[in-house]
Structures are given as structure tokens and as C-alpha cells.
Length: 144
Image (cartoon, rainbow, N blue to C red):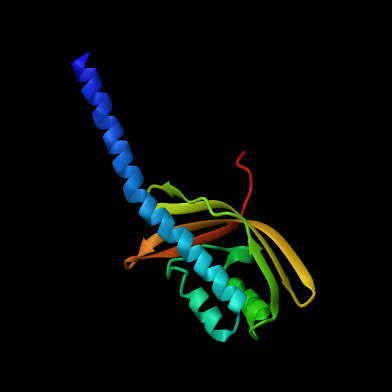
């Protein structure tokens, strides 16, 4: 019985330690997401460049989420500064998935040039050269 209690205590200690270690990374990713949204709200060419720096060199998005399409959309929506009239997002809830951190559901609503866009996205982040970078963006879908 004593061995079982010691085993449970060690297991719980390991779980708490992992939560503490990973919560710092999750918080860092969530803070970086908020920073990128703030840059988009501020707008301008410098904001676009800084947002694009948030993407990893090995970014794997494709189709509508290829980096070239994201860059084109950003330049159309946030240059010149103030052309994005509204940008809102839902809460971020980061999840550690191995070596990556996923924010599986991000609701985004934006207005620019009289058009309103609403979309739900999934972001995947990974540590690159000591900082967290976006490695994938996709439209959120339920898993089948």
C-alpha cells in the first residue's frame, strides 16, 4: 500500500511539474498571438513585415493559407495603416502537442474596405531559434 501511495505521489508531482513547464510556453504563445493581432490592428507596412516574421522558415501552410497568400491578404487589409476598421478574436486556449503548441480554435472577425470576414482558424506553433513561430495555419474543421 505504501508503494502505491509513493507511486501516486511521484506521478502527481511529475504532472504538476510538466504543467508548470508547459504553461510558460503556452502563455508565451498566447501572448505572441495577441501581439500579432495588435500589430494587424495598428496596420501599416512595418506591421505586415513584423507579422510575417512570426512565421517559421519551414511554415507548412498551403492553398489559401500559403505564406504568399497570407502576405497578399495582409498587405491588402492592413496597408495603409487604419484600413482594417475592425479586428476581433475569440479566446486563445493553447494545447501542448509534443514539440508543438496548437491553438485549435481561434474565431476571427475582420472588417476592411466595407467587407466583413468571419473565420475560425487553427494555429500551430513550434520553437525555432529560441522563439515560438507559426508553423501552420488552417481553417478549423471538426475531426471525423
